[in-house]
Length: 224
Image (cartoon, rainbow, N blue to C red; front, side, top):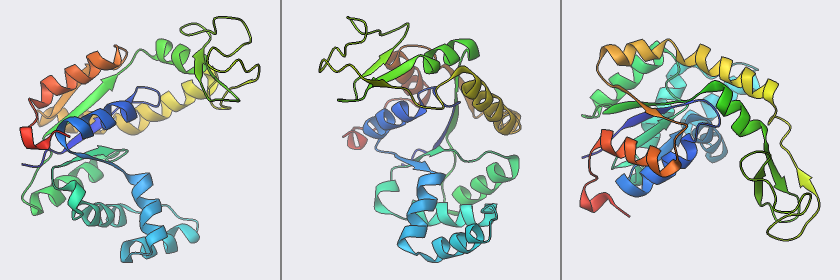
């Protein structure tokens, strides 16, 4: 049976990491609307061409096109065991449209999992990140500093880079945008008994375990 979930969480909460783990555990496929949109446009599918025309005109892709794109994607063989929806839905109309789409396919949304974070801790987690310019090894000012100041532990490189958006002001802005966009759909799913919350600040393995406890044991044939 296909298991469909929505994974909610602000940038930096670890959604991508958990989605990859859930793909391995349950055989689901992560569906990012942004990735699907780019793929549909590149492949020049019927939906992709409609989306391209809208974007070329400088407009946002509407819900009808997004739902059509998701419907196409769910027809592909790798989605037969279910999907992890990432970045969709963001509004109540989108949530209602997704419910209708899944019902039409004889399926449903099984769970909506919110990875809740401590805003201040998340800002500290993201804002302190930096990587070695030579080998790409990752470090953090507070949580994982280099053993020798200014020298990469992995390759001995002495040049480091920080992402331009990995600063406290930008992270706080992204958090504000996330809460503004996500807030309306939380009551929608909570009223349907579909919303569960896990501690997104916990250790990665602990978060995976918490999500797996919500979803239940994966079918033996779905494990990779």
